[in-house]
Image (cartoon, rainbow, N blue to C red; front, side):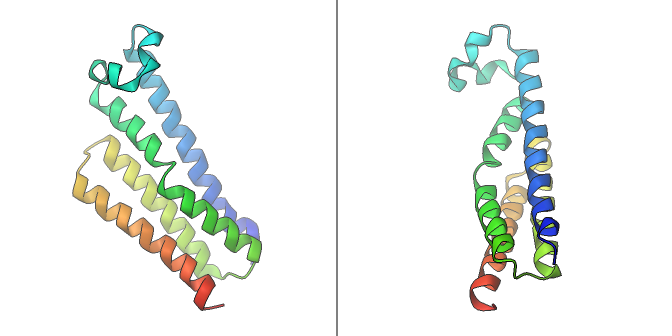
Amino acid sequence: MNQLELITPMLTLIIWTFLIFLMMAFGRIRFMSNPQDAAHSKDYKDQLPAWVNRTADNYNHLFEQPVAFYVVTLSIALINNFDNLIVQLAWAYVLIRIVHSLVQITINIVLVRFFLFASGWLVIAYMTFTQIFLN
């Protein structure tokens, strides 16, 4: 298979992270009267609407678990021994993270977020174990 097919979901998640950054930046700029208030996030959280704070939290979350996805995906692409299932799992992970973002920014139901978070780890684990034990 073509390595670009596996890397494209990863690049898509990076673009999604940038879009979340833009949303967070827009919210902070729009609702903060003094940029110096941003020196410490704990000092201005009460000034911002809940969706702006949740967007900032989600932005941070996109630099946690997805890092493992990036490493696993790049490793598999470098090994260049993968099939269509791995590509589909990579896309599934990206979809899970996008839905996780949308849930966190909007309705923020913790049990739904946790289910999505756990599902993401299962995808990463399966992608990893297939490389270790099935190849």
